[in-house]
Length: 410
Image (cartoon, helix red, strand yellow):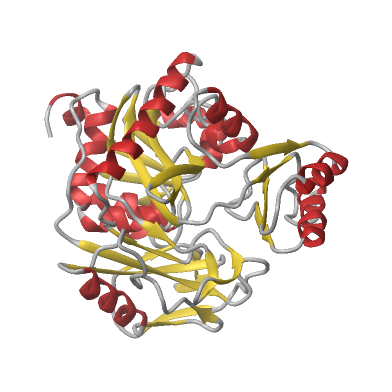
């Protein structure tokens, strides 16, 4: 490390999931003093969990990284130069899908055809102009659960109304978007950003459906792997999407820095933007970090300190298999004790500690990690790692990192 990044001593990471544990894991390897708010039982292994009464206390730290979009949407980066993340205006790319889609339309960023509905009547009319399968997305933040894919018109209309009135996801309601369903291959593209400068992180692919063979409800993510190899032509098209996005933000008067995630659908070689996230994906983060933790952390520090940062090619492959609790995502079972037969490579998600015991405290409990020189080796290690842990109601997909396309590493 050189320059301004040498002056950074203390780092505070905001969030309480596997993503935040993974970010801390990377920075711990560089010897930083780490703090987490609120953190979990895993983040305690790499730093100190703290309590904050208000955001102004964050000014005590040399660097603040928000793992969760929630804090960015609430303005944690507004007028705080020590926060590596977009301000609340930039965070609207994720906190408002309506804003994001209209932004894409304005700056000619390729995305699916869409309509915005602010009433049940508008939802009905909009769905009539689309065909099955129907895609309905909630405007606001919904922890990865605000997207409905329905095969029948009646199901789409019924669940769309429930999204709008707050009965489908407790406490979350508002306008919705009806999106054209795109058939293709999903790809997660994430970049480190400072203004209009950006560097792509290794590409990953995640698995949203709860059960093996892409069955069951959408989740926040049941696993991921990387790097996903793509050809140079597609890479150039993806880089162009990032350039257009960052130039558009600049024209809107928004100086963006932090992480920018673009969820893509590759349709006949053309990348379409499904969504923006203004932070690292989860479980994509765990995969990216574990491939090259020191290089990841060093590039973040360089971007934050206005030094040159660049994309890198990882030497290793990584696989993340999420161990979820029975009932996830709708109503995950909590309170079970987690037991380890031996030490393994895990990032902790929904895990708390009570009386010296580890207890399930969320839907996505643990991320079982495997790293290797080949994808097959990484996958085998991730699944072998699962044998080291148990809690009642534990379930996971057994098809993470299965190869289905020529986009994937062979």
